[in-house]
Length: 73
Image (cartoon, rainbow, N blue to C red):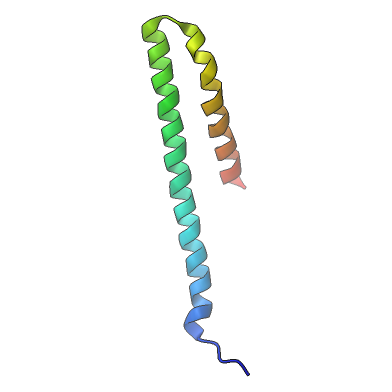
């Protein structure tokens, strides 16, 4: 019969909670960074008067959307 340490069985849910919290923090930092990129791009486009620069900002907006949809699951 195998001896199981009672502390090991309790560590697993705690580790999953820590991983989930770490994942949420990393996602929030990534979304914040992408929002910063979009804001910087919009301000640069408005300041320069070249509104075609706004078109590449679709990519960070798409990644923000995908991250938000993934976090709701």
